[in-house]
Length: 170
Length: 83
Length: 102
Image (cartoon, rainbow over all chains, first blue to last red):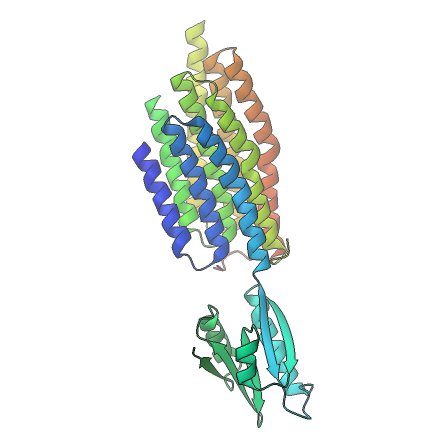
């Protein structure tokens, strides 16, 4: 009995570590804490099981969800050059498409218009992606450590094939 | 009695497997609820076998508190990330 | 008399085990999310209630029975709440059956 419960706990922990979606990881952690409370019970430690049932399955789930809620802002720097203020129809449609991407990924888009050069933005600001418009050609710069990089590439290749994605390295 | 433990243990494992492979997040939440109820039944079985009524307090705490996490996650998903 | 209540308790627990098995089977057999929700809520709750009443019969009149009855009442209040919340979340989020979505 106890070996089966331990195997269940280990499976839940492995699934929580290597899942791609953070919300699924929270659910796996709930399963993990339920199972580990049962294992404590089988080891004749009811008080520890009580504490684990309270803390693990309620408090830590709520804390993880609140942390996930904070972790959702997707900052888009839109670099405009000189007289073009980024208000024409083509730029607006590109921005709207990027916002649709953010909604799909359950992120909140925060768009900042700027005129600084790209090197300054990379050096001085927190950014998720930088959009640059040059001669009617849009470029998207994304840092190589960004974890949305594959999703953004597949989305852009389906919706807006004219945009090419460039990867910034350290 | 051993057969009861065996039966409910197998059911718990099957429900947990549905959590690990369920296609959507709501399937996982439903199966988490199933696992909770099965574990409560298992704890009551152990308390009944070992004649230790204070183990029932743990089952009571399980029942009282386990729904909070499920409720939070479902509301979180329903409002698209705004809690 | 004592053996008779124990017999009734064992029968009820076996019935509960049967219903719980049907519920878990429904989780695997149905291919729409909403029918899976039906199997997970109603059928499984029937199994739960039957099993706990079986424990009450089996143990006789003691503090054990009162605690089990308290657990039963709390679960009867909470279980529909959880299922309603999950299914409402799925419906408002626009989850259509037959469409795989992470």
